[in-house]
Length: 187
Image (spheres, rainbow, N blue to C red):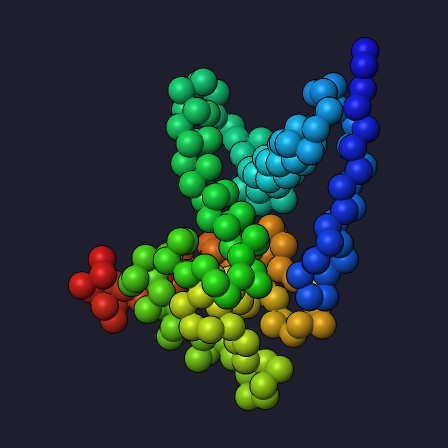
């Protein structure tokens, strides 16, 4: 079997982040820059797929523990779970993304509810406040992470899959009650 080796290093990583440095082995021919870039892109996609599986499995939704027996029921569970898993991944990926809007994950009504939650979840000092622009994906992720039990301090490890899953569950429970009680027009 013929293997090709590829080394790729990120030149300008985000502030405070270590540069990505990949050493890849592949059976795909690499004889040009375009072919090398394609393999790097595929590897990036593969990493996202692995993250999706982590959300679906024990780190998040734990669909492996289902007691459903029919293939059709398991397929329906998986389809429903993929929607939730996508939201969790979007939040995790967007936890520092101030360019993307929260509307990628949340409806206008849900963002309105998040705005009310920010007031409850922020502390009194600047270090305890949501540092992101309102209605950005990073802003929404901060709120969901706080609901999941994250302290909000930048010195703490960034929120991961399990914490965001807990926070999202908390949010949807809160949103259901909030929209029914205070804003029935959103129901």
